[in-house]
Length: 457
Image 1 (cartoon, rainbow, N blue to C red):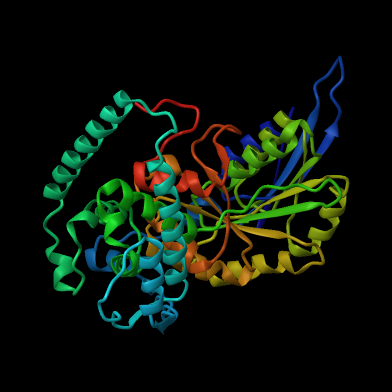
Image 2 (image 1 turned 180 degrees about the vertical axis):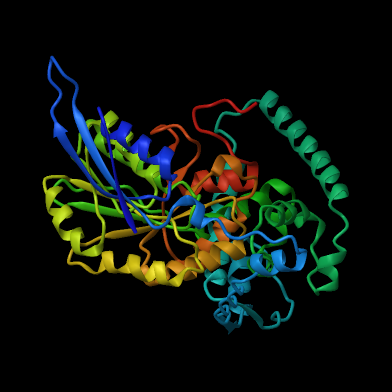
């Protein structure tokens, strides 16, 4: 490893020189001020970087043989995928639950008790609770005003007829369900639209099918009159499938938030949004500090330094876990400390173990896993399992504006039982950051993504 020194009138200028010579992978060892800026002469800053080998030595030898080139590309064997934990299933007698639901709906039945179903733990309770809430909302929606005139009643009747026509058109569009019939799950016509929406959103099929099975057992016939009531019921089910954490900052309690996750999900930009939000939250300016462990990428350090200068907040860099406590002491005066980390592949267990050393200090650190919504459910689950040794406290989802499906989010949060704290809905800092909300996510799931405050085209 060789050390190189670069200087400039600003730290950013020195970093830019180092970046032009060695690329983004040079390791920043030291940055210091040599001479303060005065009226007569410019300032002078010095940056020391460490480089493993010259760029020429890093280039792999090329071969003209196609087989050799393929062998080189496949040298590292693909790790075995982690075994999925056994699906928790319990045999539940639904006869009493169904009788209770039918009684609530005012429907008496003399049919025999339904057969026992094997369902994931928790979905039955969600379905039953959602049914009660949906019925309450349906009753409220149907209640006419006390002084409704005949004209209003006529309009209400016409609207009902139009809804029925619209429902019939939707049923015709969704009549073929050969795949589900072959697998023993028959989807009635009145459920076809909502099933298609949920399936196309990327929800895990096991979750979707079990919700459907429970719905067919629990939902009274009166609530299947049209797609509006069915959709209202599913909205309640989806709201209860996920957990969102309310934002709260205690002036007497120091908040330390560490963002971890794979490469390319937008951790650094999300951290900058959080820093701007906390520093101006509710007109109560919290003292915010940034600690970056991502010294391997000059671009990331330069980006954070620019944001920190813009927002006039402190920033410190940590080279290894031994220096962590010392740099944390330098930010002792801050109400909020945000920690940026290097992105790691979920298959690089060694780097994730090294990252765990930073969380083993005496500080109470809120570890947040940052995930991109554009990632499919199987990969999201793989990433979550790989980063679980860091004891994940909450989740942040990014790139909501780049995704058309939200089902993968619902399935992962339901499986992991971890709350969502924030949602990144664009690139603007700090405007495109939202506190997570069940209602907002359900709206996006069923109606498509929408940016609050902006008119969709």
